[in-house]
Structure formats: C-alpha cells, structure tokens
Image (cartoon, rainbow, N blue to C red; front, side, top):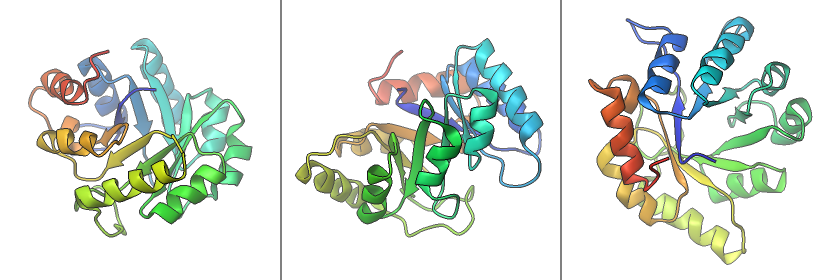
Length: 206
C-alpha cells in the first residue's frame, strides 16, 4: 500500500481527470477519484484507464459498487456515506476499502467492520471538504495511535485534511502510515518536485 494518496479535485483550469493525469505524471501511484455529485460512471472508467497507463492504483470515493464494476483497486466511504459493512458487500472482498474517521471510536468501528485502512482527519481546516469535522492537530493522531497500540491493532492510518509539506515529518512521528493530500499537489507549481519532496518526507521513495 502506497503511503501517499492523491485525492482528485476539479479546478478552474483543469478537470478531475486532467488533475489525476498530472498527479500520475508527477509520480503519484495511488489516486482517489472524489466527485461529490452527478453521474461519475464515465469519469470513473476514464480515471481507471489513466491510472492503468501509469501503473497507479485507483480508489473511488463514495461509490463502492462503481469501484467493483470498473475493477478499481479500492473505494473509500465517508462518515455520511454508506455504512462500511454495506460498502464492503458492494465492493467485494478484494477491494481495498477505507473509511473516514474523526474520533478513535469511529476508527475502531470501521476496523471492526473490515476496513483495510483509516482516513483520519482533518488535520487542520481545509476548503476542499464541506461539513468539516473538528480539526485534530498532531495531538489527535497521537491519541488514535496510542488507542490502537493499546488494543494491539495494526492498521494503516492516513492523515488527511489541509496537510502541508512541512507537516509531514511531525505527522509521521506519531505513527501514522502516510498522508492523503489534494491541493498540495494540485496547486504545486512543479508537481513532480512536490511529489518527490512528499515521498522523501514519508521516507517512501518508491
């Protein structure tokens, strides 16, 4: 499992697919298509083709059945999306399934329901997500990792939400597995250089 997850967004000058292609060209090898409204079936299929061209793994946000239909690597469900057990049923056993959590209790519930990883956040305020949950800061990640360790649970935890390059070393020091970012790569003047710097900070130069 990659330590860097790029989450797609549409910008004034580029579509989701164009930003996904740019991220793949820059070296991202795990991409999440995150479209919050409208028919995503055509875009999901197109995103899978783009990711395949670069040897990248595609996850589909909110739509586990769609992920299964196009043969995507995984899917991700938010706190207001389908319950994780239902998502697992729709996505199938082979799908790498993640769930969003904002508290240790939510994370533990996802783990009990069969999640493969936890997207934990937000780290700080971010404009890419509506109805933002309370921000966690470094302390929030340390607390979760301590809870998991006390229960003997080992599961990848991805920090998400407004993460900047300079935040990554301190986040990794808490014991999280990796980070999920969007604007950090989308808005980078040199995306390839940014991805290289992120991977270096993650000690993940693959």
